[in-house]
Image (cartoon, rainbow, N blue to C red; front, side):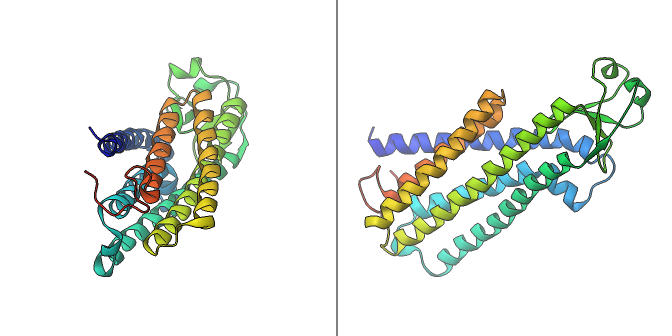
Length: 272
C-alpha cells in the first residue's frame, strides 16, 4: 500500500466521521428547538437554534468542493463552466457559513440579554411552559419532578421562557464566546485556503508567499487546536472530537494544495 493510498484512506475516513458528527449535531439542535422555539419560530430564532446544523452542512459541501479542486481535478482543467460552477457552490456555502457565524454571535448576545427573576418556589411554574438552562443549548423542562432538583433561578432570558441560575448562565456564555472565536477563526482558515488555491492554479504559490501562507496557517491551526483542547477540558467530548476532525480534514486539504504527500508541487493528478 503506497503512502498516497494511506493518505487517502485516512482522509476519507475523517470525512465519513464528519458526516456522522453532522447528524449528531442536527439531533442536538432539534432537541434544543423544542425549547427555544416553544413561543413561535422567527427567521432569527431559527438561525440561532440551527446555527450548528446549517454550519456543518455548508462546511461539508465546502470541503467536498475543495477536495475536488485540490485532489481530483487537475489545475489545467479548472476553467469555464467547471470553474464557475465550483466557485458558485462555494459562494452559496459561504453565505450559509456567514449566516451561521451571525447565529453564533446572536446566541452569545441572547445569553447576555437577561433580566432578574426572583422566585421562592420553582414548582409554582410547573405546566407554565418554562424551561431551565443547564448549559449551552441544554434545557430542562420545569416539571413536578425536575423543579425539586434544580436551584432557584436568578435570571430569565429576555423574550423567552428560559430561566437560569448565575453559574450555568456564565458557563453557557463562555462556551458561546468560544464558539464565536472558533467560527471566526475558521473563516480566516478558508480565506487563506481560497488564496492558496488561487495562487496554486496560477503558479504563484512558491517562495516567500508559500512560507508566509504556511506561517499564517500554523497560527490559525494552533488557535483551533487550543479551542479543541478547551472543549475537551470542559467535558464537551462531541465538540472536542468534531473540532479535532475538522482540524485534521483541513490540514489534509492543505497537504493536497502543497503537494507534500504525492511529491508534486502543486499536485496535478487524481488520487490513486
